[in-house]
Image (cartoon, rainbow, N blue to C red):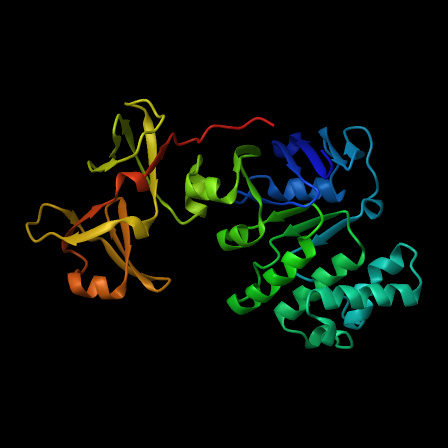
Length: 346
């Protein structure tokens, strides 16, 4: 395929990850800390030489275990967590640095810099000093800097993780523009970012791919415990039955048909807003262990089960810590899978 094909093997870090990114596609790479995401980015950018596999861009091998194209000749655009702008240069000079470094004239470089700034809505910042910019403004300038170099591949390494909510929205809009028309790999811990930007998702754990697919498939019906947590689902350990899961604290969650054989260890996952919470004045239900405000809702924790309800609903129930309640979840909202999620080759 045209675009990016990568098989990254770094034995010292126990990483063996294969992925593909189409010529006009954004692929999100997600996983827990230490899973190998940064290693993949480092190999693609030319900062680490792999022990095996290969990185191929539009049919051209950039690296394998015997050779490596220098970083400055790869046409890789990298936007990291921090913009790291040159403090002594103006915004436009920062953005023009990339084109100048590959041989553009000063006039050409500044023209490309202004075009890139305009593309991300940052042209009015052109004559500003980096020290006068907000976090969101500085990150948009960093995106423009990557664009001005006309990258063949764009690497986005947690590009909004250091920003507040308002700035994240502005930067995401700039990232949509930046990613258009080129293969883009997005490393993120933000499920909203995945849904806003990614065409596909690759999940890595312990240096291996454990899930891949569209955002809707991976986040809606996850195959790994991490993907379930990432998407905001509650994961409940237990043992599979033919009709769902018996939880370790003795409860039961029914599920639509699943593939885990009865008797095996299993995880049941559901979104806490799908849970049905009722009061139980007979004292035979679950004890309310915690009540927490959460994203405009109220989270009720009762043993291993969790329910998120509106403040109005919570007030109507009159629940407090120590009271008893019942939490049930519709069977078609419950996903059951084995704890390790399985590994996906290639």
